Length: 487
Image (cartoon, rainbow, N blue to C red):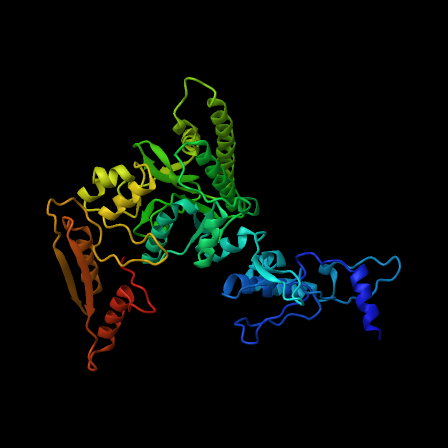
């Protein structure tokens, strides 16, 4: 009856609801979310709706709490009356069971503090702006990007290393790999990758670091600060129940590594072989088990001690090599008491093994991941990738690479350009055998392009013949909506 009084009471006596209760939601009528039959006036539906939009659509969720004054009127409580818990209200069990049957525990990310952006400022005076929500939990990205078995790749990025970042992103697109998160170490890198619509995360504390990060020397104090940030983020990944693959940005991924690792969770740690018996810190997989959590906690403690030792060493005349103070050493010092597995060094070669000694090439093996280590400096790494025709990009657009991977160095200055065309129909096993042979061949640094032409069955073809043809088409893909299973 008195709207002015109601508004004044709202201004004077209201309080902001917790982030779990969202009582004001505006969205377009054509939003691709089908509302299940929730009971009105009972909890859970708002969290489910928000989590569904966050996890399963490309819609941007905006928190308007700071800039739009909305009063949610509630019945005035009688004197001495205690609020009834949501879980005990009539119909609460029905909504609770319905949400968990539909999407398990995903509704727990449906809180307003997980919105993509925040609207802040005075909109009535045209002084409001959008800003990224840096309080957003990493759980949203983990649920969006992890594979079905809850494995996620995490790569740390800095603005000073962006050419290698773009190269890695382009290779990930070439192999159809999307189960990754890019962990930004500085705000500039975060903004660049956010604008490119990449799955990038930065902690609010780290975002305060507005300076650009140039490349830092391996093992130095600044390098170890970066590693500490990564280690602590990876611990949060494990605590959220996700297995992580941590990789350096100078790796080149020729296949999905998750197809070549062990999913046996009794193995606490897997990693790239380093110096035959050690493990590289630049490519490791940790399982989210109690053993994995304990191992990683020990690595973090060791790394914190490394920072103390590095500071003290600055005042010593006889100094130990900085490589002694890396997280890689922390990991290797704990392998004797840990269930571990060294990955096949021919499938996961380091820089020396692939670029200098040509070990995978000598056996006709196409690597899964090539580590660009054993070489210092961004410029030197870029030049090496370029000389091996492994540089897909140094900018935000990906360059086509038609040349394939050179498996041995040729003395010829001008490589021969070869085009192989396979004519196929409905013999899948024969086609696969031929492709495996072509994959293993040594092309002596020549440029090789591969075409596969598949005949269609005639109108007189029988059902068995058509079925075998469909198996071939499912394997090679159609180049548009169905990707090829042959990489």
